[in-house]
Length: 335
Image (cartoon, rainbow, N blue to C red; front, side, top):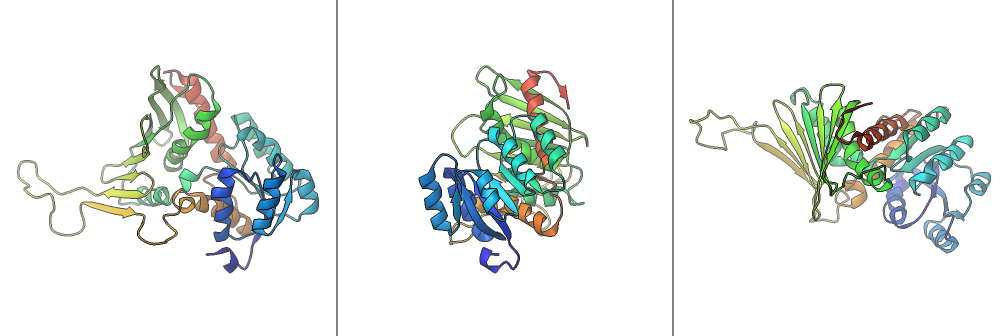
């Protein structure tokens, strides 16, 4: 739906209107049940004033002043992770639902504090990859009875393993981790292996027996790939825009002469974005999951329910996995 078609809207402010917010978050609001009341940008008054004029709302440089003057239901934070905890706590103190870009915080202790202060409010982190249409299709398939039990997963992503706790790894490594956690559930333990350049693999052992591997790849883009393996079928996500479900080809070794048997119940099914029309599904904030994660946030507010994927608990689990991988250095760390 388009914003103008919704009967009920969430009164919302956006804090942080830099490049990412301007390219992805603000345009996505045209398709969501929101009424944009204000934008806030601490460091650049001219940017705040011009953006507010463009979107027909008020502008601020101070969040406390914004909360005093605006009747808000929710706030979106698009600032650096080290500012998220204090800003979210401030929003909670005013009884306002909060969404923040990934990563939610720089350590798990900060997220545990936010959980203790949430007091029934809806709070989410922007782990967009877990909400990508391709991943949502993958989750639909792997949770079907025809798929069988998920045995293992592989995520290939261009992020190196640092020698210590670094902000860059959490900023980017959280993307493939969020996909693996959305599919595999709770992690029991984890180990990371790296060479001198930072290339290597991180292995997650899930409580349900699934094993997930994150291959820290290097090289030119596109370089993002996901695989989900089960005894009956396996599924691949190629470059976020192509989903391939391999259902197998009936064969007898040494006897079968054709790789295309009769019928339509074997072989591959392929879904991919259309790029020949001015369609919505090939726009980045749809293809990359930004729309879907924000829709879940606002829908939870309107329906008075709590989110699952992207919740504070999900963010806590992901951050604990990240911390275990940073500690690992080749040793298996229990969560």
